[in-house]
Image 1 (tube, one colour):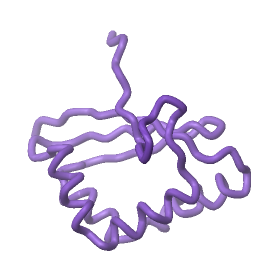
Image 2 (image 1 turned 90 degrees about the vertical axis):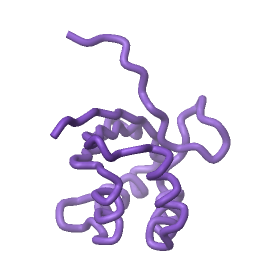
Image 3 (image 1 turned 45 degrees about the vertical axis):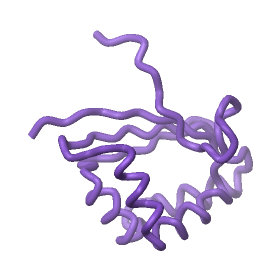
Length: 113
């Protein structure tokens, strides 16, 4: 199986209490089954989120079936994902240069060894 990597960034609201709550939602064993199913159903074979301060980085390994537009359409028609996204707006905020309503921004690769 051939995979491709996508990397994104997003900010959390700079509030230690909210950051702690967000981390608890994402702690091992706390993932909502409907959310992890929607991720896997889209062709995402691995997803990791890293945090430094209030800035997050998400790294996704996807298989050849993954299509970002199709994933967005799947999410838009999935009530569980929409509920999750509404909840996450309590914690997440767009990067300073994000468009209105936009959270996760794809990173531009500028170096590869």
